[in-house]
Structures are given as C-alpha cells and as structure tokens.
Image (tube, rainbow, N blue to C red; front, side, top):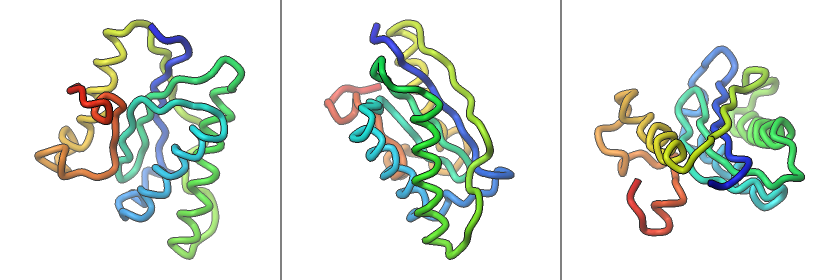
Length: 143
C-alpha cells in the first residue's frame, strides 16, 4: 500500500453550486494539476461536483496536507472569481480528510469518488460527465 494517501472532500461556500459552470469546474481541475507539478501531490482520482470536490491523492513525505489543499482552493478561487467577475471566498473554510489504509480501501474510495455524479443524478453514464479522472482509467484499467 502506498503511504500518505488521503481522500479529501471540500465544499463551496454555503454549498452554492458555482462549480456547475464548466469553466469554473475546469479551474479546479487545473489547480489540481498545478499542485501535482508544484508539490508532487499525485492525484489518483477526483470528481468536481457542482458544490464540492472529492480528491484522492498521495503526498510525498515532505508535503503538508493542509497547505496542499489550501493551495488548490486558493488558486482555483482566484480563477473562478475572475471568470465570474466576483471577489471573495469560493470555498468553505477547512476540509474533510481520511487516510487510506489498504489497497482494497483505495479502490473502494476511488469508485465512490468517481460515482458521485451518478448518485447525484447529474448523469446516467459517467462517460457523459467531464469533471472527473482516475489514474486507473488513464492506465487502461477499470475501476
């Protein structure tokens, strides 16, 4: 089992569905990618929902989880505010995190994350939702 693997969940301020707009959701995806390059926070799976984010990641030993999440929230908020011609907070303060203990739990959590748009009734086929990814799909494996 890889070390330092976490499931992060964080919500928009007052659960306002600002991420429903595709360009705002893509801003979050871009922030996840930037954080991977900047800190080495390896994204295993994510889904951007209209009012929250689920992120499964592996951190290098030298990276602080709170700082990593803060970087993503801050950089995405700046872009989202610019896109919406607004200012102020986009995200609720803080986040929920759960350490993943085993390979089996990792797959269960990844499936849970990816299936969020299905459970929410946003789409009937995950292939029709564009704001998610999982490393296993990119590598040609099925979740």
